[in-house]
Image (cartoon, rainbow, N blue to C red; front, side):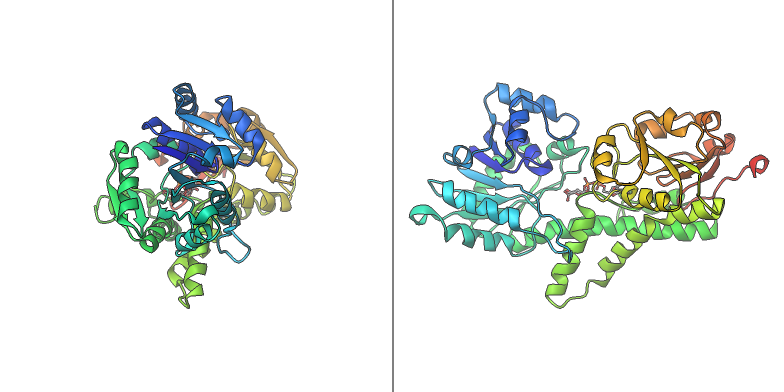
Length: 439
Ligand code: UGA
């Protein structure tokens, strides 16, 4: 099958590369010529384990190409994926400008009927709207079919998720289009669910909203555990053993971030509101998450009283490990607050420092060396559970810091290990350790 993919962001690039890997001839189109140039040199424009190898392999096989010219990418395509961004508008709704622009580009440049597949996360009803938009603007009255095929990959494990997903959802109006998409996706060997358009669009929002709900739920349980002296990790383990609940996405912490959960939960609240439905449950999920992101500040303040002139090591900037993505990262909330309170901040991240420098105005010293961040610090605040932070020998905190006081927003360390160390340790939903000697 000859496939064009519009947009080489996270979803578009991984989708295009994966489709070429299973044997299709794919041309990825992006309006940014600099991105296209890098990709044409076999260099991924995002950090994603395993992606570079697949790009280079499939370019060498002549199954994968990149272009900034819609005409070149679309002329021969049989199927066109739209995988452009749908950023959040100030009112929380999804901005469809890029999707609509892609639709116009398709209408202008196709020379035969194609199936247009929307991968971008779009509000219910968008697929229908885009179909009408394209069909009303094509040359010679060419009519296209539309399909919704939402993406369920996670950043940092996008390649792995694409080849080992739990389901592929295909929403169409026309069974013939659904059959073609099923054929395209069959080599992935992943169960395929065929639905109508609106249900497919809703599956994406409902899935992200449900996962966000699990996280806010366990974070609330964690906050209650702290009051009651229980350990949220044990509670989550006990809950997760019930298969009806499941153990995934029950990791308490400083709240969810990233380009998806915050945006999609807001968009679903907005979408429901447009139809006079107050989605109170999801509104609470969002509120709990906003509160969770600043909880550590209260803990730090009640320990120190003031942060004026205190050296604070922030460990981790990315919204989660294995990505350099800072979008909606709790670090973006915590660092300005710490700075406002007068803290001198040294922030460590193995790969997100460059992005952080662009995003944060506050006076922060950045480092890619954890030792440098900890040296002479009054306290350390763990924001991202990077593997190297989890694996630190706990004695490093005592050796390098003024006092080994750690606020762990990701529950990185086993409490039994912490007990054997000299750490003064505050985590989320677990008993704190305050060694008598250093109290
Ligand atoms: C999420 C979904 O997991 C994907 O299925 C979906 O395709 C994607 O959004 C999207 O809509 O594009 P992603 O945002 O990449 O993927 O990252 P996750 O691994 O889901 O983590 C999101 C946030 O939740 C992170 O900040 C993470 O630290 C936090 N989280 C996750 C928790 O606090 N606790 C958990 O138990 C799990």
